[in-house]
Length: 219
Image (cartoon, rainbow, N blue to C red; front, side, top):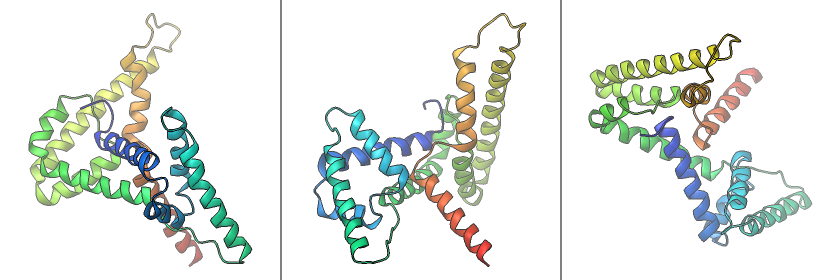
């Protein structure tokens, strides 16, 4: 397993793959276009990520994104001209990533016995969100593995804290050595361990919290 949260990395690769597939094969696909139209061009995060992906790949370029968003702009203009209310549904890429997250977490819990030793000996560290998701399933199905995972997770986090402390100490004016690569990487690794990487699944979680908070405030 690579450094960082393995679930976040899987979701990131899946997200990139889906965007590439859309831009390579489905720019003019009516079914996909309807899905774009439902959210008026995806959520903010995925709209910009789609454009960034297009510009970063010389084989793609901005044409496909331009074709899709010209349609979205025309749709918005028609809505305003007809005095209709602008309705924005859920981003279908967010829904896909959330479903992938659920499937990935469930697959890990099913193979936890063989994955635990691999995870323990790797540089990977599950982020808080994904450790909690896996733990909640294991506590019901396999409490012994849940406890083993908790101990492995704690050990990894403590080692990460040691690297962070060493990184901080290297900034002391008395320090004779520069931070190592492992110490430098401890900062983004710590943020990832606590907050994970941004993707459609985490964005949907934030949106749900906002909606719930809004309802509570209204009441």
